[in-house]
Length: 406
Ligand code: ATP
Ligand code: MG
Image 1 (cartoon, rainbow, N blue to C red):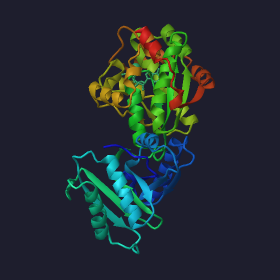
Image 2: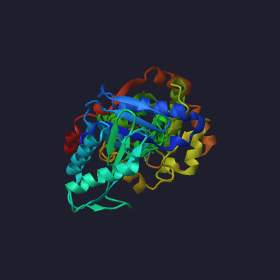
Image 3: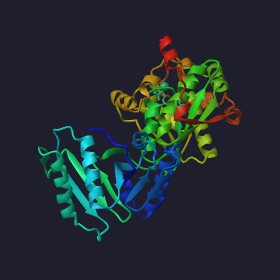
Image 4: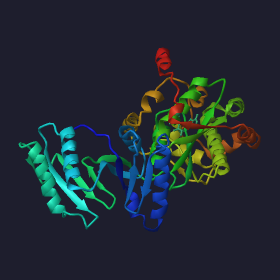
């Protein structure tokens, strides 16, 4: 079936319809998110009521709008429609025109008419007949089918006009981003953390990406890769703040004074301390990361306990219990996988000890941390954060260069 150029899109809300008193806030947030996702189409008018949201396209390219709308969380599904004057001849014309566009000669069909204007000249049943007959006049061989027809052409008679639609497009589900508060996503250049960020946004969390960079040990490309991964997540929200944390001093110091077996544990504790402080500074509520149970040394339960000990703030790990293959599947869906497997070393791989402790002991951790100027290093890192705004169009164009390097 082909798609038409539509004049309106009717949006059905997702889970938010169950949120009682908060409903208004949810709908307003969703309207705001839709507005920012569609900011390149200023002509679009958004009308949100309790049950539905209507986008009046005013000439905007409906296919481009549909693609963007499919990424907005909080939308169950939506139906693009065309607006027609409320007169029988105009309706017949429009229905026939629509069927000519979409019917390929094999589908079954039905008309589903509905009226919110009860003064309209025909009842819903009469309309079903009138318009159904108009279709049969056009395609005498077409099959009418009431149960699960291939084409269900909906006709809605509203006060201002009539609206025709035939397709329902799946939305992204979830909750509108921003309705759950803000969280700091620890974003490396790997496969897992972008997926974690995607899941967090899907549950309404507004994320900011925190990335630790250790130049010159980590390259400009590794940093760009983290930004590009953020750009891949941006279409779900419009834009994401990217916070680059200078981490060289911390890593050099740890390497100098801490025995190898504890590099990883103490490095991770420093990352978490810093993310916690950034969370505080930027009014975040929680920390998110891409840890997955048992994947590597830092992700044994014992390691997690030793690392997590530096904060009381909830650390949410959206992919903690997923298998690597399941995470990869999502990464492919959201198109972060190809980027994530590009071979740029991040700060953890470069300073990775040959044998990190998988069961670190806290007494030892305390002992080694005494050798570090934790406060001072944190202050210096926090004083030199580099914050930038990433949008979908921030994506660098050098994917081919990446391939050359492989
Ligand atoms: P990922 O695929 O997300 O890199 P991973 O399986 O490679 O995860 P680790 O490298 O051990 O696992 O990192 C675990 C988590 O720690 C990451 O998912 C991320 O949340 C955080 N992390 C690691 N390195 C960095 C970094 N350089 N900047 C920010 N966060 C990081
Ligand atoms: Mg990693």
